[in-house]
Image 1: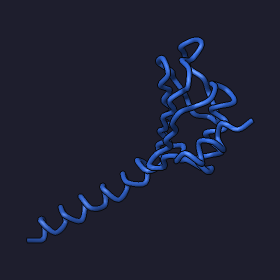
Image 2 (image 1 turned 90 degrees about the vertical axis):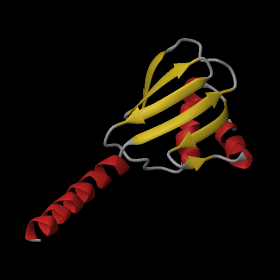
Image 3 (image 1 turned 90 degrees about the horizontal axis):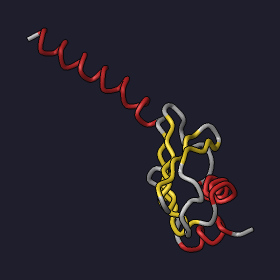
Image 4 (image 1 turned 30 degrees about the horizontal axis):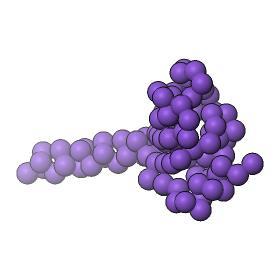
Length: 104
């Protein structure tokens, strides 16, 4: 019985240790209004963005989303061009936020 309890506690400890690491990974997606001029990788705020046509994806390991989604989006727009949609983690910009993001 003790070995089952120990195994359960060990499994919980491993899950608890892994959860914060997964939560710190950054991922975002921007759909540009027009295709990126040149495919390739762009670094914005320590995050790597790679575009394929109109779709650009940003990733980083161990880097949490540390700013409001509209601020992130504005940095992407400044470097890659206006967007028709933007998602950062679980945060998706609505029409009003997209307008603010694309504003000069």
